[in-house]
Image 1 (cartoon, one colour):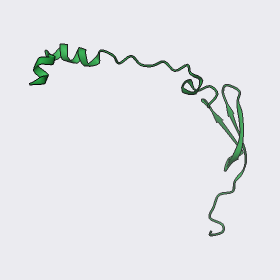
Image 2: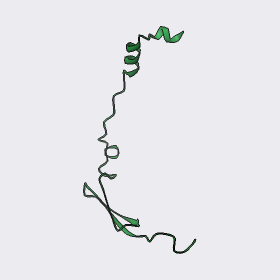
Image 3: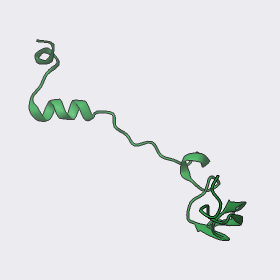
Image 4: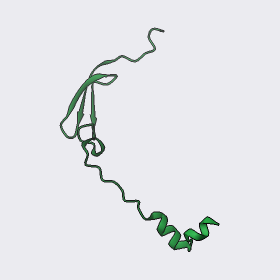
Length: 72
């Protein structure tokens, strides 16, 4: 590896809005984030699934396409 071209790394503390803190290494001494693994809806199970059922039927109804027409 070439010397003098890589950034200096140091101990870093990552602070989330929810209060969680993580320690890692980075080029910055402190990082503040809005969403982490403890408060993200996908990881906490609070994510709501978007209801997409009926979209094909709505499309067919809108353009007058029936299942019989589609089979031809």
